[in-house]
Image (cartoon, rainbow, N blue to C red; front, side, top):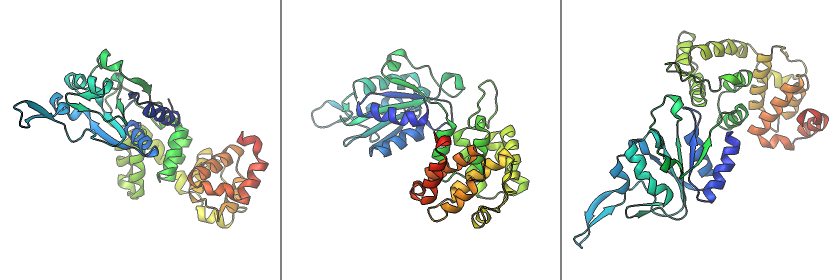
Length: 327
């Protein structure tokens, strides 16, 4: 399931208090989307890493409160009130005894003397057994307590997220150009670095520090692997030779317009990042010179990042004249 559909699905499951398990390969953003959904519906998110627990940790510690009988002090990491999402991350990486301790908590919403508050929902996540991550087979009794959802990586959803989170323009443009490299994991190999949504976020942070040419390749290869790093560096050479967005905005009618698809992806991305209601007339003037598919890409990315540009006369006129390519 694509992240955009996953978000609306999780909201339904949270409202219905139906436990859900989110499956997906490493580095695709499973944990991030659960926290994102919780924020969107204004709920707390208690993140419990099951892999770090012992079976007794969930029940708590015994104590005597004056009646000569043992009681159990509830662990502080379990919710005590209010409303929110109890997120059991990496649940299937936890030892079988810890998973067994989650049975009652997931289905009956209680364990020992502890009861999960009524307004809390349970969501869990983990890697698939085929991903060569640390996992233990989930017992069928526990698996049957969840609605199971497969996380699907989607380039459009990732680019939308990237535009909202200040991912470098060149990274977004490169992945628009080479979407197959957004996530490329081969469980049959022993490579340590491979392309993933998480790794591309790391790449953006590295590029933001302007690493020198003598170390740039090694840093990128250590983040997304040698093949993806080599392709990215080739793309960056094109990106860095393009006319500056400032020069384009000064003279959109006369600025250089490349015919290389990689360069057009790059220009569409960087201009979308620069677009504002004040300069959108110039952006549209340049977009009108671009092939239709790149002009649409530029407009959509600009709207995703700065929705206010839709209210400008330049956009309204462009949309009316290009209704056929927007459908």
